[in-house]
Length: 240
Image (tube, rainbow, N blue to C red; front, top):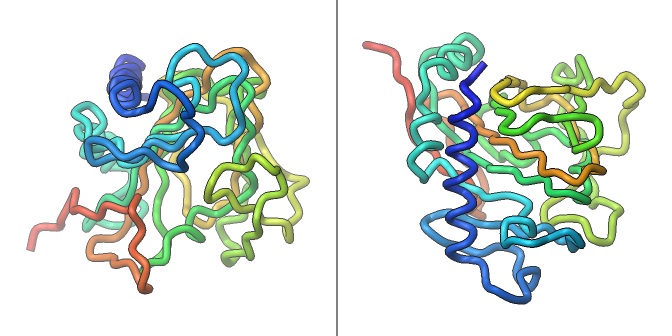
């Protein structure tokens, strides 16, 4: 359990960033807006309830480059758990501040490892609930035991207004899917092969969350195309 005030501070930093870089009009014209070393991704599906710039946002990538989120990336309470799962040498991989505003569609079934073309797997995801996550506002659902399966084929999502980069798994049995209800400050740790999705937000409120990924120290990206939302740096090393 993390103090909810920390999540609120991270969200406030993200909102300040968004208000400083999003245009006043035609926000959905671009897939990403850069600013402050971060990338703001608008929600492709228009939000009829939008009143502020952040009401149009899906995610802020690389949010760890702000003060509060950067400190949290090295929080001993988080690293001690990740160390138990991956070992003493740890690198940070990626961060996302997720807004999931009212009316937003959920992200379909996927495995995070599919998006990480690295020379070492698995990674560990860390999901911090900033606001309450409920069945109505788009909580996560997970498929227990699916972390033992290989990485499945990921296909383009069927929604016409699907967000950029959203792909889905269709060749698995999801009948045992389990929703993950969370309170502000709750933290979920999960294997990068675990199949999970988020539900649609059918409420009138935002479901905000912070997602980090960690990997074994020295992991490298493979392939010829660098990923602009990956930011490797060491957060823990064993004493030699």
